[in-house]
Length: 140
Image (cartoon, rainbow, N blue to C red; front, side, top):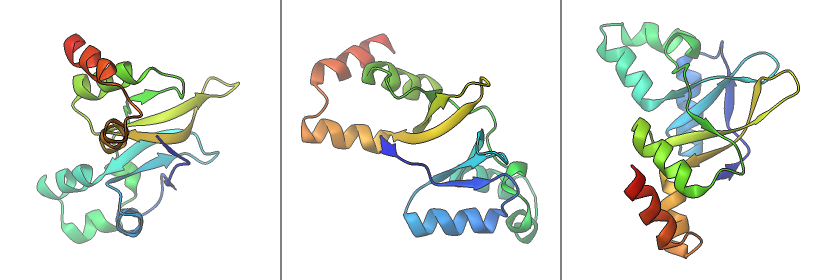
């Protein structure tokens, strides 16, 4: 996973979030509330959806990311087995999991991102065994 999270507050304008994605060459940013807890995720797909639903491009770009973000984020904990993470990605047809830690108040703090690209790189480098991949594929 990528440790550390590129995140924006919920009130950040869409154009600022897109600029951050371009700057870091990523496809999504985590959205956090005031204290920094997970509020959602905004991806390039969310932006395209907002524009395609008939909203004016200029207006969407000025709107806060909270207006277009995905609120029901699929997450995992840092210690999750890789085959289970792969099943989550496949079952939900998503490209990334937000890695979170639960805090004392029961809320979730984003600590990383696990993307399909991370998994492919780990397979390529030999860090993930073929058995883990086959196990996840068989269970999906």
